[in-house]
Length: 109
Image 1 (tube, helix red, strand yellow):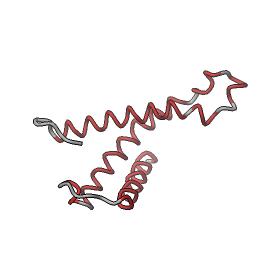
Image 2: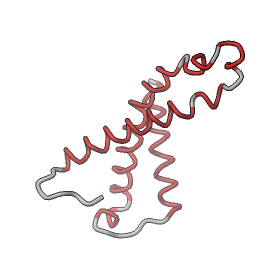
Image 3: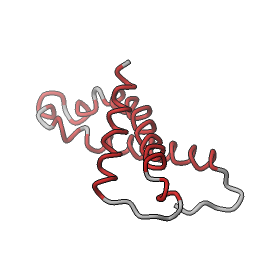
Image 4: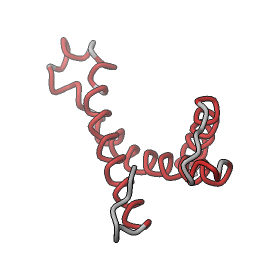
């Protein structure tokens, strides 16, 4: 993502946090009912969304920790990437896995 001139790193991070949290909430709202299709017969279509709010709230914290954690871990272990270097899919997967574990452990406290 190319940064605009005068667009500080802190603003860049805040923008990523807001956008990633918002996109995770949209994704959770879309996929949540798919996981519970049996409920329609008993409770109607609105029954699909019972319990959605805890899932959305979880993503408000989990997603931002995971996204920012991924970027920080990537820059820590692969500093060449910050200067335009490439990163392998395997490296992305490993770093992404670690950031997901860190975010999950943080929420379990």
